Image 1 (cartoon, rainbow, N blue to C red):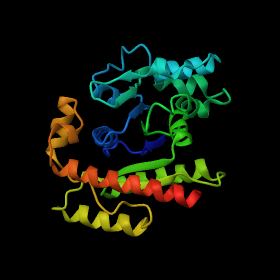
Image 2: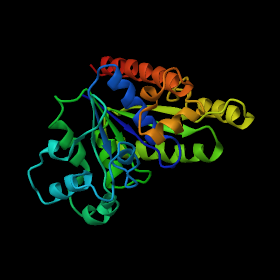
Image 3: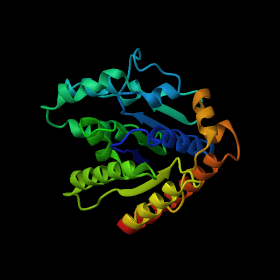
Length: 264
């Protein structure tokens, strides 16, 4: 089972869209996918028709039970979606209070990692939607993942947010001999604008070993798919965004193979 975390400390960069789009493709290619929503906004959960304000079993309950030293049965928090091969461990808005509740407790940085180990035989890929702030939730996402995906806009302010995210990445993993792989994904790219083109060049120049060679273009089909609650690759065939995400996924799968060989 491979675990990817999608994270950025700046909002509005296409984080949840990236999670959903990759999940839709993986599922259509025959992989069993588990999504984990660690964002208090619950956008990923809402995408699949779940209400973060009213959901009963969620990530919050997982952390609450772990803090009470209760036996964790990961399946109890997971919900199936209407899409074959896609399940979700949803968020409730209550997880916004977790930092305050569990900050002083030891051993809370591996709650998600330990929970996922118990279902490792049931899924091929786990994709975690991380919150945009550093805390117990993001720490759990980073601790669990084997590959960090960082969506970012090709614009100046977004590049500043990327610097913070990479600093967090280095800070969290400075003591680990083996760091997770890291891929920066340019999103919502509009090649018609000079500012976007120049920012993309600057991005690839600053992080030549981390930036994916392609980009996710601006595509109204993403918005339409979101309104329908369907991954864009399943909503419409041959859209610009769906094709770009397919190219991205092929790259990520190959990167994981190469990373595993390097670590062997």
